[in-house]
Image (cartoon, rainbow, N blue to C red):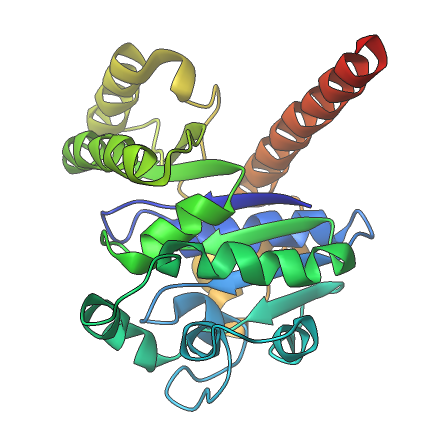
Length: 271
């Protein structure tokens, strides 16, 4: 199971939109997809038609019951309107986790989500994690559980400043987890008509070079229309600019996945 985490400490940059749009394209592969909402605001959960204020099971239960069996974890999965796609939902109780865990003893709190994924990974081919815009136990869990971090970053000056903080956070968490997490910056809300977008994208590529995806996610008002009806843009308007951009992104990510798999097989054969 290949898992990506959509992560940025700046809000409003397209984290949830990226998760939903990528899921919409992955669903067309016919493979099963797992979505995990780690944001106490529950934007992904709300997008998919559930109310975070009413969720009694979901991600919070994973932390509340650390001895859950694989069957217990599987019972937390909720169906979604996206074909072949299931959700570990967020509840507003997630906002209390850092305070609760801060007063507890014992290691392993940063691996709760990774262990839960392990329990159900035979049911899914791909996983996507939507993260909160803050460093805490939930972001640490996301980085511990994912194979690669995707950092949606709006093409403007403030997002560039936010990227400095985010990449510094990645370095800190890597040291804590003793695990290096590859990351890729995804330029979002790009408007080629404005100097602000043009300049920000240029600067982004100068600073982060090979960690920046080679294309962009453009401004597209249809993203709002899709969220209003609770379906991914690739389902509602598959040939819109935004949908085609995310299709290009998922093809790129799947290409990396296939390349890594092939490299692993060659390594095993030569061993």
